[in-house]
Image 1 (cartoon, one colour):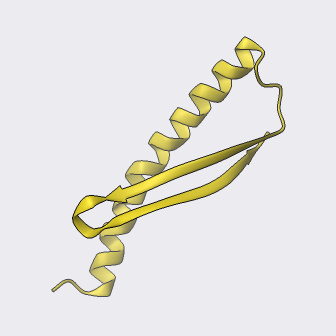
Image 2 (cartoon, one colour):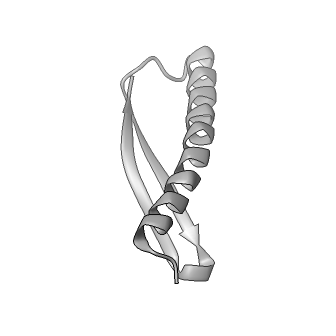
Image 3 (tube, one colour):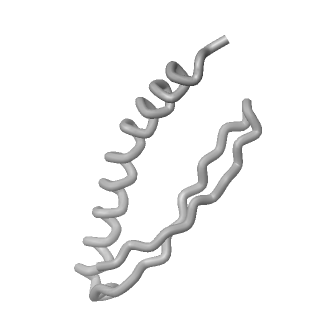
Length: 67
């Protein structure tokens, strides 16, 4: 069985992989929307769905991007 410290390290490693990908995708689509004139600033409501069928994880995390 894995200890709490080792589990936290593994989860942190995963988050470090996901964060730059999510940031790059958001940056890309926000810039595209601004270039099209669909977005000038303000607040964008966002959601990220985190799932893992093997362990029964299915959660949606809501937030806002304030430009």
